[in-house]
Length: 319
Image 1: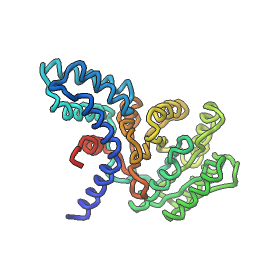
Image 2 (image 1 turned 135 degrees about the vertical axis):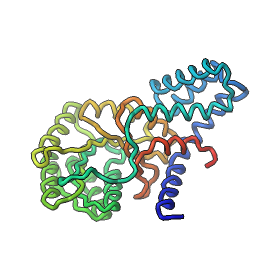
Image 3 (image 1 turned 180 degrees about the vertical axis):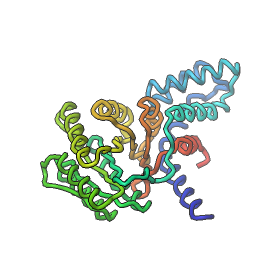
Image 4 (image 1 turned 90 degrees about the vertical axis):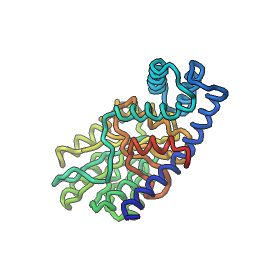
């Protein structure tokens, strides 16, 4: 086995393990839904609809999947229960493909003389700062120089945690005193990164402000100030969602999409929940690429999201 094969195998093993609870919950429900049936009929489809909704796939996405399977049943006239898993896998894979977002194969970046700037948003408690640390680690491992900006100046714990991650990963963390202007922190971080020819800048932001208007204004101000240093910044606005919250993650995606131009999603904590179906629904409904998924607590357990690998792992009942 070559080095690449080893890392590829390890990644799949982590993904399989991370989706174990989701897979077990989903297929347990599916077995009950088709118990005593020999073919896919209206009763099975009704039960399947309930299985998908209770697996946090989301109502709209579930109805799309059911409609597609209904069309296939009508076309084929007869579909045995033993075919259902394969058909379901095909339709979910097809739905994810229609998002038209490329799967990431490495933690590489577009060629540029300027740092690639990622502004990270999300509510408190979703694993935002941890995701930033793990992301910084992956970029460092790929040979990139990384700067972190502690622009969540409303919580001392957020700044302290980011500093710990910076020390652990080996990258500078730019911070100011508690209560400082977050936009000022972002400005200083980009200025320092630009002067030192860094490859990547990751900016943490506050997880909660008094209301949606304040949130929108704060994020807009941070972006405007960053553009004074680097006109193209931020290159990416990454929304971090906690996969274990299920339908709450949908609501957060909706609110942050209104507050700022979210361009990518990271869905965390999939290893600790049976609600991994949320990845399917969010990818389908918001048409924002799921770029990263968290499948464990280890520093290496933040993975680039690959649609095919995800679906293969979800339906691999031999694991």
